[in-house]
Length: 223
Ligand SMILES: Nc1ncnc2c1ncn2[C@@H]1O[C@H](COP(=O)(O)OP(=O)(O)OP(=O)(O)O)[C@@H](O)[C@H]1O
Ligand SMILES: [Mg+2]
Image (cartoon, rainbow, N blue to C red; front, side, top):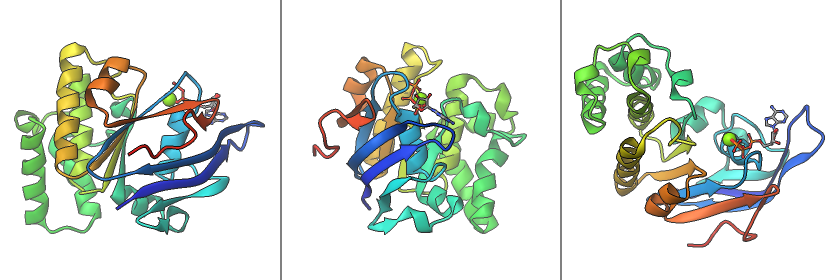
């Protein structure tokens, strides 16, 4: 299911200047795309548009050919998951298990299905021993894995991560990268924002560079 932007442009309500101009990008399932560019070039803005937290001024964002403008935040979130730069901002339950189960309950899944998915994703992200742990007491890398577990358990099509290597040492960066490869192999589309050239080179299938609010190669479809 293709995720694409068509002539996307954005100006913050309080801002005078257009931040993003004529952005045309196609994202695909089973692919890792990196979004890069200088500080303030509009990377986070672009990812917030992709998940509907911000709504485009001009242009469209389509998922499987359908304009997401017609979808609620919750409907988009079911298909396009977002992991914040600081995952602690997304955590609000009192145990790791509840954090993963929360979204699943909202999906209206039955108890057995919820329990199965919690166990599966705890295992997938090597968090089983923390099942009853208070999420905010986890390390940065573990909190990030918990958020990945919580969003993937809902079986979205895409996962977007904003600057996921922030606060991770080299070992944990590699751990994260290897998880991203695994998620991609399982058929999800992965989109991450990063400045880290090495990390991008090691894990991204393609790189989307934003310069002055435009795609530096003029198009975001190189594959
Ligand atoms: N709520 C807001 N209102 C007005 N302008 C904003 C708002 N949020 C961000 N901006 C501006 O939009 C531009 C793009 O910001 P954005 O956060 O998308 O950049 P970024 O590429 O993610 O930067 P960084 O690398 O520092 O994370 C910046 O000039 C920023 O000051
Ligand atoms: Mg940013």
